[in-house]
Figure 1: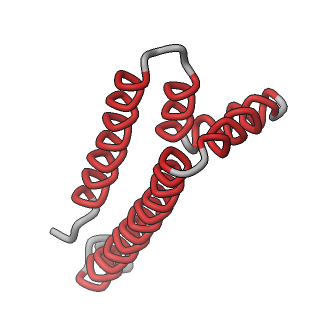
Figure 2: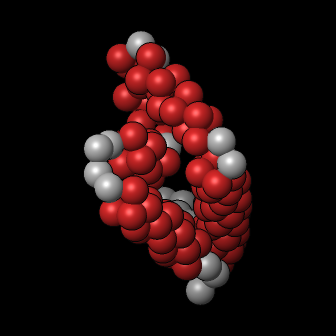
Length: 122
């Protein structure tokens, strides 16, 4: 009978560790890209809020005008922004809406910061 090699040989462990590092690097890069994207979108939201609120109305109408399945995908991908638009377009007093939108902004960055921490190298 021939000798079988152990699956956890040093080469197997090294290769596995490299794969984990590469995956963590990609995950971290994705988290940073998502952070950058949300920063840009929230800055755009703020500019629309301060400058021309019609831009926010147009964004809300665009979102609501999408076909159902596409609308669901956009809501899932951009949940904090979509909720921010929904809050702003609601009938709540402007101060309440502004505080709730600020809460959504904070929630976005706390969630993304947690994802970045989760993928930080050990």
